[in-house]
Image: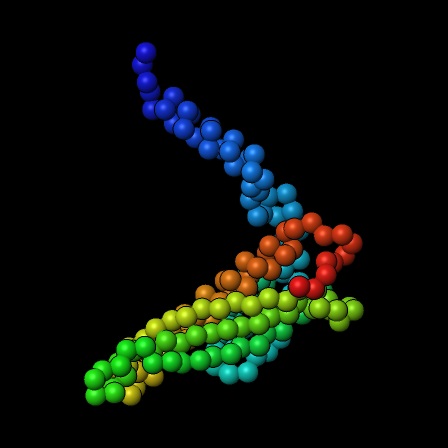
Length: 177
């Protein structure tokens, strides 16, 4: 019996696909994918205070509404950013050489017509940066870590909103969580 690559791949891939189909796995953008993307493009992101809030809002707008903010939004997204910096590596002479920057962002999706909160959740990230001898270098590293953290949090928020819009809901909107 000759074993070809196709036969071996067929014998390994088919059971894996069948197992995924049996467990209820469904791609996020399958089925309601276009509706999910269309609904997400009607979200208006509220302004957020601070430098990190600016980066977070800008990145969310790019991810949710790549063609620009909607003129008549169906939803408003409110964000609350909490930031904490903690020393991570401390030398014997009490000099801090590395810091952790933690971002904790609570967000609420609000129906623009009724003002009702449809969905609440949190997104978090932790980034680290080195404290250099130069204050400027340390500040630049901290700002870069904050920028990367805002990007990660915005991606997580986008994913959570995608899941919210992709799941079937009774009526126009599901209950707030």
